[in-house]
Length: 157
Image 1: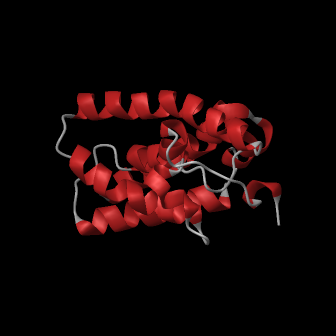
Image 2: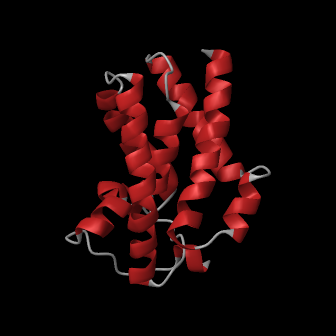
């Protein structure tokens, strides 16, 4: 078992860990990143009616606060980028869907594309994943995955 997925004790009563764990979705025993992204979908649907500026500002807040949220949760359990920490998946999916027309098809394609980039980690995502540490490192590879997926989403939709 890798250190990234070793059993640790999270505390959902702790607001930082609750957010870092994607409201508990990251505690799924298999594919926590996928479940975290899935938990982001209804929140995205609520956000989709916002103006592009407000949406972008909200995503910026999610990303910046995520540096602290993910870093603190990782520090609390002593594992850098533990698989259960999925706040970064929320941010990456929100980026993926920026200014994409909303339909069940676009949400499905965005979900799949983001997961592909987040799991496969093509260059330069892989470099960011390996070289960056702390909350910034946890967030940045998912931000990049979201940006890669966003470009393809805009080519498709």
